[in-house]
Image: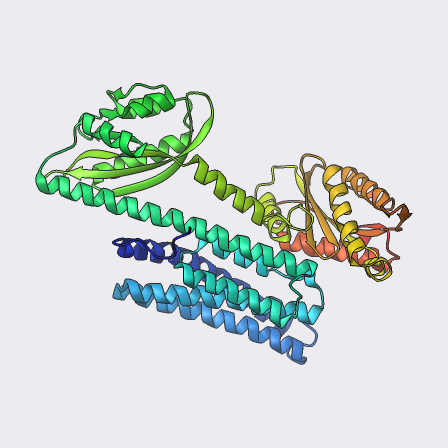
Length: 507
């Protein structure tokens, strides 16, 4: 069963961590919102023909202005709370800020969908998944927020729960709730263990004695962790026998610094992180936690959680770094599987829109010199005819079959996803030759035309819009917009064709 309350004695530690983590996220979101909404306001006032002359523009302007004012207000209030030093007030402000940003995002996208009439533009899923994966809240607050945004979307747009869009969105929201609860259990365990180690350290210092190596081994056998004691002055470290059993390395090391430096299995980043932990112990930092992917003696990489507490003398000078190394591979795999599930379109099994957005932005930011990023959007022509003539089960069969065709024929560097409804997308890094994308699109169109139901061909056709980002100056929004514009041109030019965006779209 999942716990829904913070463990006794860890409330203060949890509050500190919550304020620290949420503050960074909400400040970043606030500055981002300020820049984006300033651009939107200038665009509406000076670069649209109707400006504020239409109701639609005035409503959009109201959305932009509200978010701009709220982001500025949050930054001012956050600075005030930080000066006052009140953790509770700071935490309440962060929670209000989070709720306002996420709810605004939901309501804005609901209106956007309502005004455009296109379900594929929904970005609510992205916000909810990010909410579950990044933000710190008590379970009732977090789950209440997710459910509220879910209801806003479903009720205002009148989306049936058992429709394709409604079902996918419902499953994604449930997975987001599950991801959050798993994270919360992990956070609680970490806070509880940190409290226990600090309490143990306090008692040891209070009574003026330190644990022997045999006592550490007794603890490790009791809890199943690798325990250790590092002498700050001599740089020697003693580890429990579980260390040798797991990694095949000696339990007594004369120089920890030299040992870390000589380990070829550790990456530069891992070595830097371990040296930073050692430096923090020398500075007297009471407790540290980090996770690392380490190579066990069988050559398998496994995730471990490292917990270190600093023991000091009567004058407060650090003497030992003591702690434990816990194998968290099973927990990590469960969380990774949940995150993987959240990225999938439940109906077709390929990536969903949120995952495609993330991958597209990630790929643009990491494009190599001479590399370009291509995006194609596939849209079934007259798909309503299939549903009307053969029924929705046949329509569902067509969508699932097409998704399978696209996935099975994709090259290793292709990412295939469903944007919503009867729209699919492919994102791939390419060189100077665009023919590989054209060949893929033509093959998919040919295979789609062969889809049949009970021996009867359904005469499936689709239009394809394609755009290519030439360098890192492009944004994913720009790439998406131009591929969508190319799709519009393909539809306008007679459908069942491929259109490439080059300043103006060429079919």
